Length: 66
Image (tube, rainbow, N blue to C red; front, top):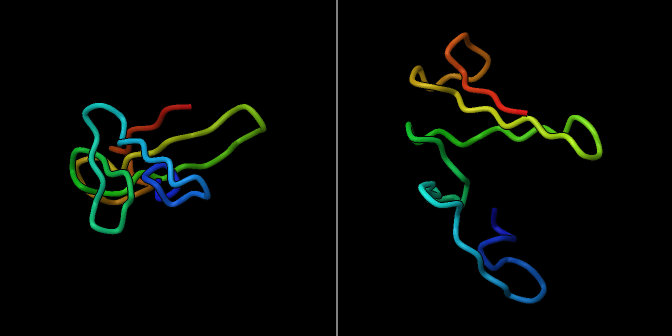
């Protein structure tokens, strides 16, 4: 996200996706304020995970999209 927010060689700045926010460290966070976990599964496939309302990753309430 830092590169998207201007930390790139061109200094180009884009905002976070509509309805999303960044925390003080520049990380994209879910609606509970926990940073998303991004995991590239293949060249053209990525998993994005939210810790969910319990604020802990890898539990049954996590929200996952691929």
